[in-house]
Amino acid sequence: MLQPRPLSEADAPQLWRLDQQCFAPGIAYTQEEIRAHLRNPRQPYHRGIEVGEELAGFILTVRTRGRGHVITLDVAPSFRQRGIGRTLMAAAEQYHLANGATGMQLEVAVNNAGALAFYTRAGYNVIRTLPRYYSEDLDGLLLHKDFAA
Ligand SMILES: CC(C)(COP(=O)(O)OP(=O)(O)OC[C@H]1O[C@@H](n2cnc3c(N)ncnc32)[C@H](O)[C@@H]1OP(=O)(O)O)[C@@H](O)C(=O)NCCC(=O)NCCS
Image (cartoon, rainbow, N blue to C red; front, side, top):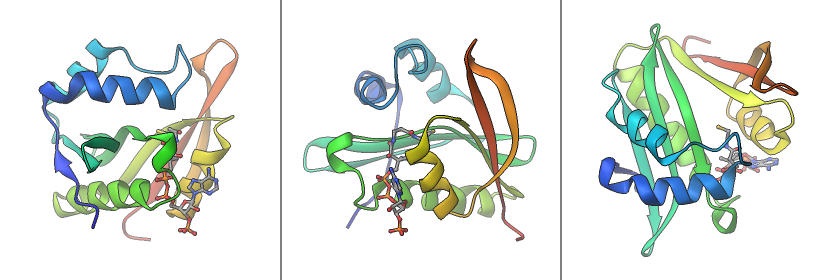
């Protein structure tokens, strides 16, 4: 049974290590950015899943303009395709829905085919392209899921 647990600033070093495994330099967050997200007061919902002693995955979300906003969703390479990402997303969606959000929103790099497949499977649609969102030569995609749909 995968049970998401709350995260605190004390978890920042291991969240940062996992984020470094999940994203390329320049896209991965710094440890200070992760700490700032953990302190964000906008209805944060941050959870991690441990398998044994190891942090297998985590999600950071806040509330932005009436929607839940995924800051990042990270699953360690050796724990992928086992339902951990889906469990974390479902828990975050449930929290934001229960707290009055109309839907969920997030950004993904145009070249992140695995994440795009994952989010499509989870019911997300591409709203628009975000030119140079990640870097001079890497656009983002804005994805949305409407809870009423
Ligand atoms: C994207 C990511 C979070 C998926 O996590 P995961 O734990 O492997 O996903 P799950 O096992 O819960 O998969 C849920 C569904 O998505 C599908 N899926 C997951 N990764 C996929 C991939 N790379 N390609 C195709 N489908 C994929 C699964 O097959 C599953 O489908 P099903 O409902 O038919 O069984 C993980 O690959 C990851 O951390 N990637 C690096 C970081 C990243 O890109 N994060 C997202 C951007 S914020």
